Amino acid sequence: MRVDAPGAAFFDVDGTLTTETTLFRFLEYRFAAEGRPAQAYREERQRLRAMTEAGVCRSRTNRAYFASYARLSAAYVEELAGDWFRSELETGGFLHGSAVAELRRHQAAGEPVVFVSGSFPALLAPLARLLGVDAVLATEPEIVLGHYTGDAALTMIGGSKADALRSWCAGHGVDPAATTAYGDHVSDLPMLRAAGRGVVVGGDRELRAIAAREGWRLLPAPPQAPPTPLPPASLRAAGTLPAPVHH
Image 1 (cartoon, rainbow, N blue to C red):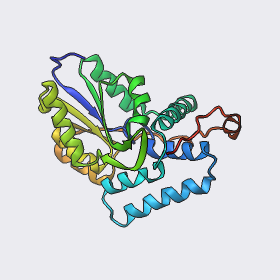
Image 2: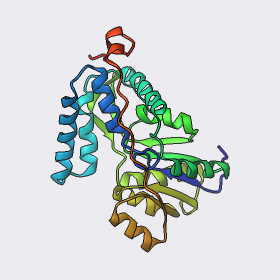
Image 3: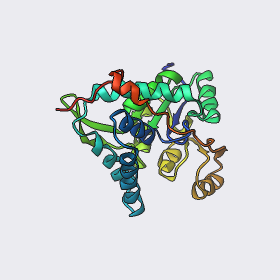
């Protein structure tokens, strides 16, 4: 990464660089790997969806997502996340080509590229390595003595994304006015406004209307993602997948 880079690019991940939400794709994969019935995943999704529909703020639902991770070994989650990501790539259709092309354009111009995501490092690290990004600013699940507690120490949602962008720029000598930010959801708005240029990827009607007023560029919405690839039950039976480790 060039220290004197003229600018930088900040990318939301879920729904921007990926065609679906990494948090839920991995959760479905994890539940299947642990031998849980499909109904267990649907119930967990409904629990979190009900919080959103009740008006609970996005940061709180982001923290609530980690309840099912309580007492899981961080090493187990990281290893299983690698298996999941490889399955996604093999299946195809997980990455949003238009947004990835933008990322490559910034890299070709010598600009650092940073993920700013409500997802968490175990899921983002494989994608960061694949795309060669310079930093990952993400939600930080609370991990004590190598195990998840079921809570989050930091959520990278809403205003936290703008704060993270400004803090990263301050630490790397980059003028925020020289940066570009990419997002697909109204919760990305603080980050889009903190950057010198905003780019809306797909986005709902409200966000696209704001983009029109701000003069921001629009990218097409990602295509529909294929079904989540699930590990065959035979792999769990054969002991190929890592076993969850609790306290």
